[in-house]
Length: 304
Image (cartoon, rainbow, N blue to C red):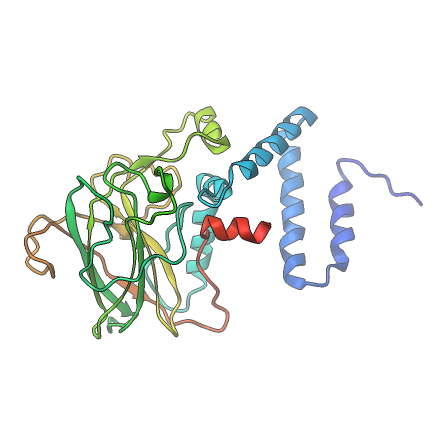
């Protein structure tokens, strides 16, 4: 007998057709996706015109993506999905570590290798020079030697190198390794908070929702070492007016820190300092990357 397909039977029919999916994880992901997507359409009572507008919006998001910009990651960030996926990732850890935060849409692979104490500022800057330092430890507080510390950030005007006239040139990025006691230190400039890119479809969405669109001042990190879970996170500067209303929901209290004007423990004297320590949890066989994002050029390449 021909099955009657209507708003009450379509969900089960779609899921039944997917029952033959050989990859169990793909099946586990797709079935609830269909259920919730259909439930959302019913709850919102979507019209054909509205669904088509949604298709146009997602098409525009894809068209805005380039080797230097990832509009889909920005969409994920502004919908709170990136932060949610990070929280789920943290929950799977068997030990407490530094809380995750967002990779964001401006991460780049192959940031330049640098020595401890080097400056990641490669272009002329009028920003406040600061020393950024701390330790990378395990869950017991023991220093992790030779840990990888990737750093990237916006400048004193709130712009990343990817947003400037020649995005192929890297600035305010560096790749360091800790010393034998897990210490790292480098020079940079204090970043400024900024409005997310508003010249694309995600910006249109933010304006339609009457949201301010700002991120508080922050510095990104990816920290890792063999045998440990990689930490993808960011520190946020206290006192920023948007630290409690981040448009992409990246801020948690444990990631907020201060610029200290007179820190007797700073490894480079006579400079303001930002101190931030990282705690790594030991990895398990089930651990995968915590990066909710990637270098835009690699995503474009993968989709080619």
